[in-house]
Each structure stands twice: as C-alpha cells, then as structure tokens.
Length: 383
Length: 143
Image (cartoon, rainbow over all chains, first blue to last red; front, side):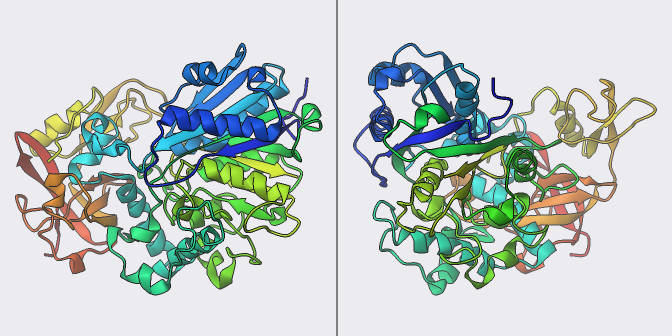
C-alpha cells in the first residue's frame, strides 16, 4: 500500500458544458453531460466508475448521477463541506480512495445554475443562528460583505490599493479574452471601467466579484498505472491537502488572533511538506477567485511571497502571461465561469496537457486552490 | 430588518443586551478565565465547561468596515449604502463585534457621514430596541 499520495494517481479525463448566464438544461442533466464528457475524454466506460466525490452546495447527488450515467457498483463516495472550499478536496479524496484500493475509477464534479438559480444567502433567515446571529442583523449579509471587511483591513495594514485588486481582475479578464468558452471572451476590461464601476460592498466593486454562471464540470481519476493506458497524457496528483485552521470561523474569520492568516496557510503547510518541489517551482497557478482580495491573501498563504507582500506581488504584470506567476489562465471565477472553482481544476489539467488557450510554455507544475476564507483545500498537479 | 436568532450558547449575550449590558462569555475555571467569542460550550484553552458572562466597558476601536450597496434584502437596501463596522473591544482586542456606527442609538444605519469612518476610531456601545430585541450599536467617542 502506498504510504503517500505523491503521483500515485492521475487525472485522465476532463469534461465541461457550456458556461452561460442561463442554460435550459437542469443541474442534473448538466452534471451528467460533464461527467460523460470527462469519461469519454479518458476513454473509460461509465460502467467502470466506482467512486464519486462532490462538495456541499451541490444539488445533484451521487445516487442520482450514478444511476443516470449507468455506473456500476460504487464503493467510495464523499461530499466535502464548505462549498467552494471543497473543490480541490474532491480530487484529494478520490486520489486517496484510488491509491488505497477503495476504488478504481473516481469522478468528481460540480453542476451549478447560479446564473438562473437562487442565491443561497438570499434566504437569510436560515443563516441566522451561529454565526449569523453575530453578523446578519447588522447588514453583513453576503459573502462580498464578509470578505470586504477583511479586504479593508488588509489594505489598511499592508498598503494594498484598489489598483492591486484591479491587477487581479485584469489578469483574469485578459485570460478569459483568449478563451472562447469563457463568459467574458472578447469582452475586455479597462482600468477606467474598473475604477468607475458600481460598488457592491465598498471597498469591493462589481469587478472584484465573481460571475454568476450556469454550467458543470467533471474530472476522472485513476491510478498512475492505469493512467498510462488512457487516451490522454496523465496529469499526476502530486500533493493534496485540506485546511481548517485553529480557531477559524467560516467566511467571517474575525474572532481569532490573526484574521488575515486564513485557511490557505494551513493547507499550504501540508501541501508543500508532501511535495518534491516548492512555490518557486510552480509554473502556473489556478487560485480561487470568488473575490479579488483572495488572490493576494492566497499568494501569501501558499508561500509565493511573504506576509503582507501579496498586493505588491501583483505589480508589473506578475500574474499575466510571461509574468512571475501566470494565474487563472482560463479566466478564473472572475471572468471564465463561477462554478465554485471546478473550472480551475480542469484548467490546471489543460495547462499540463499543453492545450490551454493561454498556454504557459512547457508548464509542468500547477497549483490549484479552493476557496480561501472558508475551510479550504488545494492540490499540486504535475505533468 | 433581520433580528438575531440566538442559539443556545448565544442566548445570554442577547438577554444581557436587553438589559443594556455588553457581556462576553469567559471561562469560569479559576486558573484560566479567558474570554471567548462567539460563545461556545467549552473553553478552547483549558476545556472547562464552566463559563460566566463578564461585563465589558463597552469601549472599542473600529478594526475594519464595509459599506454594502444593493442588491440587498429590501429593508437593508432602503438604507444603503450603510456601514457595517467590526469593533475590537478595549477590554479584549481579540474579541471583535460586528455592528453599525450610528449618530444616535435610534438613528438609521446610514446616519454617520462616511468620511467619519476610520480604522482605529474610538467607539462606545449603545443599545437599540429593534422590534422587541435589543441590539448593540456604536457611537463615535468624539462625534
């Protein structure tokens, strides 16, 4: 039995539907289409799938999906908590299941109709008990408000500015402009558009917030041995980690000694400890971007720069193609699609296959992260 | 407006608020006595299940703030853009309470000029009755 996950498994198939503000299909149909596309990409028959992993706020469950796609007997299934914080953990859980012999073919997926569906925080009453009783009555209602609070403090402590946040929004938009599947394909952003756009939760403006998207994605994980016989070049799961720091509080991490040191730091420590390489060796990164401030916070957490240096890191085109660390090369949640970060996983695979619409030359290593601010997860992929 | 829906651990906070008292849960173990927020069943430092509610001075500083703009729930949209502040308590800076900076206890959530919002500004608690529930509001010490 493998004592480590390191390169023991690989992502061998990826699939996705169209991304749009409104799609006619149901979430269940979108999920099935994405999963079947990923299996076809891998060249694996759906009847061979024996493991499923998803994360909360997913409305399609493995019972329905397995039945619809004609999976065989399923011996492993998991659903990871904290919404967008769980995206990368689906890959981690399946990698662990396959590496330890609990299953042989695993499928992770995300299907969302946020473009046309309800917004979870609109039904605020259900969120009022802990910790909602401490925030909602005062009008701290939405994730943008909750992250805006941390963003303002971050700007105050470290001299970060809206120009830094614009650098993040711009890098993502520039990549989406190159990606025909992105919702913001051929829709350029300018500094003037950013600076004059309406505020959502000051200091965060419209372009600091992710898109609202209908769409689904999936990927397929098998053992490294099996991967060699699959249709596509394997992308190995080199390291995987989850992070729930001591005394952490959901997206309102206001009540511990160091609120600006979020779950990324915890996940990163384990991720790098298990890896053969470090942050300086990462060719391209897909960093969860529900809100622009999550990027500088994550850059610090995952060790690309020191504490308080995340905003300055974005200067001089560092996040753009040819920069120090190209990020979110499909456009990310800000400009490709907001599907709770699953598009970042598939984009990481595309980079290491060499087929991204914004290909980093000879990319061999990729960091993919899940939502920072909530209990999170991350994976390191290698070609 | 949304009223707090206290859970079992949080109920005492709101009961004290109704009496105009800002109290924070503290460990009641003699060797510990650490404050904790949000309230929870046991002390994360010494794991004692004994707790008490300690009276705070009600003074603090603004640690951070946001100004939400619509789309928002209707009652909040009507006052937007308003402020939400996070106050670190003078008695225990790691205890931070979300609230609103207002010109007087019963004034609307947008009653303070946004130019007065500043990280580090000193504030003092006041209590407002909102539909039968008392909630803490915050006033600038030097209005």
